[in-house]
Amino acid sequence: MSTFVLPDIGEGLHEAEIVTWHVAAGDHVVHDQPLVSVETDKAVVEIPSPQSGHIAALHGSPGDVIPVGEPLVDFADGATPDVGAIVGDIPTSESAPPVEATATRSDHAPRATPLVRRLAKRLGVDLATVAPTGPHGSVTRADVESAADTASETTGHESVEPLRGVRRAMDANMTRAHAEVVPASVTDEADISDWAPGTDTTVRLVRAIARACDAQPALNVAYLGRSEGRRLHPHVDVGIAVDTEDGLFVPVLRDVAHRTADDLRRGLDELRADVEARRVAPEHLKGATITLSNFGVFGGRHATLVVVPPQVAIVGAGRARDAVVPHAGGIAVRRLMPMSLTFDHRVVMGGEATRFLVALITDLEEPT
Image (cartoon, rainbow, N blue to C red; front, side, top):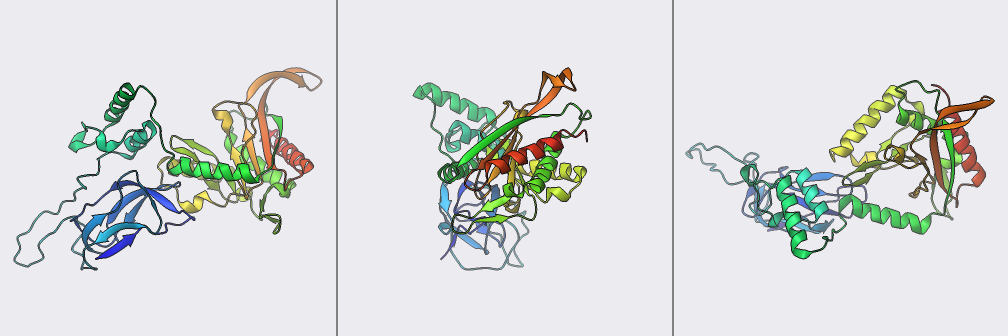
């Protein structure tokens, strides 16, 4: 008997939530065959088998949160020769008749797509209690919504949803930020009337942040604490806040000051696609030196944003609007984009923050 524990999957993560088992007790597995899919605050990850052998027991059910280092799978035997990427026994004797190897799922793990699982989690529905109507006994979106409606009618009140994955990580990060950071904000508006039609707003914002960091490097630093001080970054690596149904992700666009507009757009598209597919690599979610929140795509003008240590600043872009304002000695209708800058006043002085915002807006107001 040997026990396989949940391995350290990097990024300082201490636990993971079981999404679905790909094997069941009694199955035979081979080395590197997927055992289970787990969800961290970063992505859904498949955990492969460290050996070949028979599964004696599984520890945990879908929805359970398992700490790193805790038992995950018991093997009934030690490592055995690989006999193919299958689940189940097959004859190894030369005289054994040929058989068709077929993969099977654990009988006790509900069949459902990741999208349906996320919906069930959001609605507080236990997939194990849902009667499936989809192909091959799979749970569909309609099944989950029907179960949620039934539960609501039965209980007479809204279900309570535990914080999992990304939302649990957000709770920890925001609590830390609230405890440590001394936030202060300055706001203004950028006149973007002279932009050419079709200008890429996010790319312009990223470029403006890079130039503002060059003008005021004090906002592109990591604060290491009172005893250690601050570390100035040689590059500007911008965290891009991406809102999803699962929660807020902040993938990092690297070295933005030395990249062309086309390269920045490709990088942004790749990061968003990876986030939406929950396959973003852990290394792309760490190391931001400053953050951009383009919340104006949803609404709102100005905001007091949250600085997540060790960063010391976050830039926010509100919804652009047309306004009648003084211009060139007269009155004109101009396109204005509200800009917000929240900074950690433990490290950044008010003058530094204001000059940063002025440099940012100056760049944004250039036609190209």
